[in-house]
Every structure is written in structure tokens, then in C-alpha cells.
Length: 260
Figure (tube, rainbow, N blue to C red):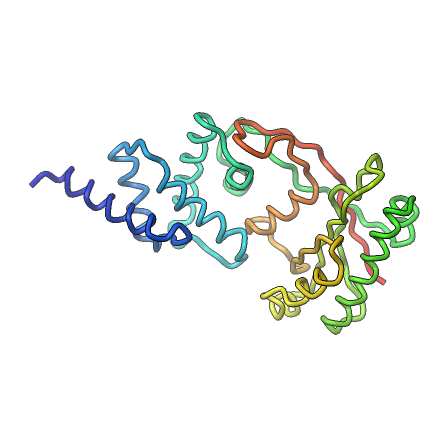
């Protein structure tokens, strides 16, 4: 029996399972076998591999509880290696690059890439924030929208006060006409879990299009990818968004305030 041919057939079966549904990703045991065979057989076509990796990245982005499995560190080490090779040879899209940055941050993998910085969060009073950042009509209109959205959030969550993070382009004092304002609601864990389907976020967005709203539990964990992605997103503006070999960033401050 030609064992190499049997391994190739096994790889092709896994490959077909991925290609049948590009939103599908393999169970842990099959994923680890797929990675192993991909390296051992020196497969040159990277498409199926990156469909698989991007499916996992998407799960990590959307589901804070998504866990790769018992071999998480080993799998992340393999994904890091694959993404590094692709970065050097072709460049990455922004989601792949951000996930690569996260893997380096989380596991201290060695790489020379420039990563987005996690923000140093500064506390500020609402009145001081308004005095500093709400200085023309366009900004005033957006901020009025924000206050209305926060009042709606208090009502829907049935709470009397809320902590928020504010970042993005609204914090750039040179930006005279920001398009929106990026905020993150910091919620008690029980309330955060009750609204896991983002009912409140969707309702607010229906009424307030200029509020780019996300939420985190107040005891958030930076080792969770969705948290890392969100906090680096509101505090860093990437220079490049496609075919990224090494990115650079314009950093924004992030402020935390209590409302009302």
C-alpha cells in the first residue's frame, strides 16, 4: 500500500468537505489532521486552508465564547505560521492581519510586524468631554444622537447608569466633520449575557445611524479575540487595508465616562 497516496486521498476528502460550504469549518480532530497533512504533503494550493482559517477567525470575532479546543495553543501556533508565510509571500487582508497581531499578543509569538496598540483608557467627566470634543454643529448633532441613544440603552437595559468607552475619529480634534462616534457600552456581566443577540444594539442602530455601538462586559478579557479586535479597532486607524505585509497605524486615545 502506498501510504502517501492514502494520505493525499484523506487530504482531498477534507478539502472537499471545506469547499462544499465555505462558511463551514471542521471539527477539532479533523482540523488538526488537515493542518498536519497540508504541511506534510507540501500542498501548494492555499485556498482551502485559508477558507478554514478565515472561518475560525470569523467565529472568534462573532462569538466571545468560541474556543478552538483542547489543542488551542498548538492550533494557534500553526495558524500563526500559516499567516506569517502568507503575509511574507502575498500579504494579508485586514482581518487576517489583525488576527495575526492577536496571536502574537496572546502567545508572545516572535514576529517583526507592527501591531495595533491596545488603548490606554483615560477617565473623563461628561462635561469635560463635551467641552473638549463638542465644538461645532456637526459634532454637536452627533453628540445629541449619542445622548439620545444612551437614554434608550438605559431604558432597554433597565439600569440607571452606564459606563462607556469613546474612541475612533470623533476623538481626533483635527477631524472637523466626523461621520459618526464609536462607543462601547461596558455592561454588568449578567446584563451583557442577557443581550447576547444584540437586541438593544439593533434597536439603537435603527434610530441612531451615526452611533457605531458595541458592548463588552465590564470585566472584559483581552485574551478573547473579539475584545482585542474591538479595543484595537476604536484606538487605531490602519494605513493599509489590503495585501498587507507590514502595517502602520494612526493611534487615537480612548476615553471612559459614566452616564448620566
